[in-house]
Length: 254
Image (cartoon, rainbow, N blue to C red):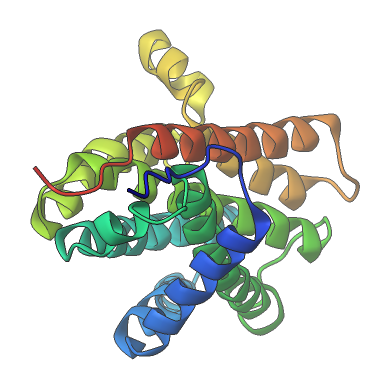
């Protein structure tokens, strides 16, 4: 009897094979691809002309939203796509093979991360070179933060999908996971103006550091120590959540 179990060590070939399979599936779902890649661009375009009479307002919040929109989009798409894998039985069949949970999560992260690169590059290019977003620092630093935000959204989506039994429940996690961060990240008011309790909560939310990192690029020509701290925190949170996603991944929906 064959009792081969999935190995726990991360394997590059299994990870890349998983990523390739996910990308092949997404190729046959153009609506999902359009949502992931174009929706942040459309939202930025609308935002620019909502503030057509006051472009300085767009300069003030455009960079922050350049990071927030990809995070939200990738969270939604990844959580629903992963849940479909489980409810269809695909995930159970994959985990019955010599494929570890870490390989599976890393493969999904690699696949969606590839799309996140395209998404972030298009949104950043649109904001800076077409919509006229005025930044003091390098647009490449904006792209870096936007990409990390998209990867964080992917990690959060993979993680929460383990706790949802249906696509409707997966969408319901958005108010619980994303909206509090959106309200407390400093987009609407500086975090140091908030109630001390809310400020303390905002200090442990990764979206706060994503917004702070974007604002650093708006104000400074060079890469500051604060910017490096913000980028490392966002990247570290993404890796941490991916690890939690691998630990909580279930073969099937209860």
